[in-house]
Structure formats: structure tokens, C-alpha cells
Image (cartoon, rainbow, N blue to C red):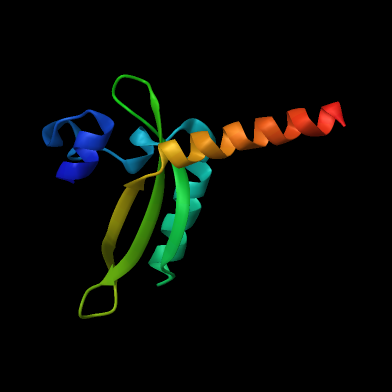
Length: 106
């Protein structure tokens, strides 16, 4: 949690007890909820989300998740690894714009 707090500009105390939905851009909230339901079924995933930082800036993250179950087989939570892919997403968007511009000229 410490690294995620740093990535988003929060202290750990500011994040504890809050829903992950509080840190996800509105357009991606549905994806987060859908993927949580899949984890409860034991489906591990890798997916992208747009997160909202404390200063309202946006951060793209690659989320790798693993479902955790207790000894009785009940869902106990998730282990998630977040990777900041903002620069990659910005480069992809710039490449797309350049390609579109070239196609318009031809």
C-alpha cells in the first residue's frame, strides 16, 4: 500500500479504509468492480485502469491481481501489483495521433 499511496500522492493513513473505487477514474469504476467479482471466483487478471491522484491528475496503471482464499476456501482478498504505465499510454496516444495525421494527408 505504501508504494500505491506514493504513486497517487496520498499518505497511507489517507487511503486506509477507503474503497478502491475512490482512486479510480469514474469511467473505469465499472471495470474495477467487474474484475473484483472475477477475483472472488478465483480468476486472476492483468488489466489497465486510469487512476485519479490526490492532486486530480490521472495515472494509468497496469494491475496484476491474484485472488487469496482462506483455509475454508472463502475469498479473503487480493494481492495486487500496480505498475505506472502513464508514459507508455501517452506515447501510444501520440503515435496514434501521428498515424491519423499521416492517413489524413494521404
